[in-house]
Structures are given as structure tokens and as C-alpha cells.
Length: 172
Image (cartoon, rainbow, N blue to C red; front, side, top):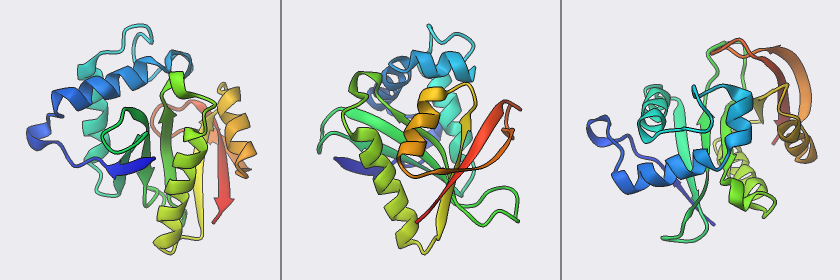
């Protein structure tokens, strides 16, 4: 498995082949996007929507987008979007904002491997723990993160859309 940070797109435009891969990754997770409401129609996720979404993420200098490939030059298996510092200064932990594995590769170990890689990056940076928020309606996501040792810390709406979430934390 290869993890590579996504560089800020030149002129705000992602290279077409990468944008096609990222769009396919999102399309392959229709069930999640039906729950999240991140896109107007989970059955019609478009490249320009993905480009806009990632551009909005990359505006924050504390955000890192990590691409996960099966091997060097191999297909895109997943993406992780992390936040080094939460907007609330009282929150000391970095966050995993999104971890998405190609739906055709679910249950193949890539989610666990990408999670371990993200955790290791934060551990190497001297961070003591990591947090994330799982949509309450995402029962599969809650089970996944619980199985990886993340513990429920709080229940509250997400900052971006006010959706009910379970905030989870794991000591590193």
C-alpha cells in the first residue's frame, strides 16, 4: 500500500486522471453519501463536485488529503482527509475528517491499513490521540471505528452541516 499526500491543485484544477479516480471512489460509496447528504444526488456524483469539495478542504493549511493506492502506480484504493488542529482551541487532538475506501475494496484490509498509516503520521508528529466524528446514521462506520479501538467521547452535531454525530477518540 502506498500513501501519498495530495498536492494543492495547480490553478485549483486537479489533473483529469486523478479527478476521474477520485470521482469513481466517491461513486463506489453511494450508501455512505446517501446517509451523509454531502452531494445533492448520491446516484449522480460528478467530477466537478469532487473537485470543489477537495478544493474547499485544501484551503485550510491544517488539512492534509492522503491518497491510498494498492501499490506504486496502482489503482486508488482510498482517501483520508485529516485536520491537524480542530477549530476549537480547547480541543488538543488532530482529527480524521474523512476516511473513504473504494466500495469495491471494502473488507479487504485497506481501511484498517490507511487508518494505521494516518495514526502513525500523527504519532510521529508527537500527537497523543486522534478524534473523528461518525454520523449517527452510519452504523457500519460506528462499528468499523469501534473495532479499531476508537471510544465514544461525545454526541453532538457536526460543525459543517449540523448532522447528529458520535465523536470518537483513540489514544496513540
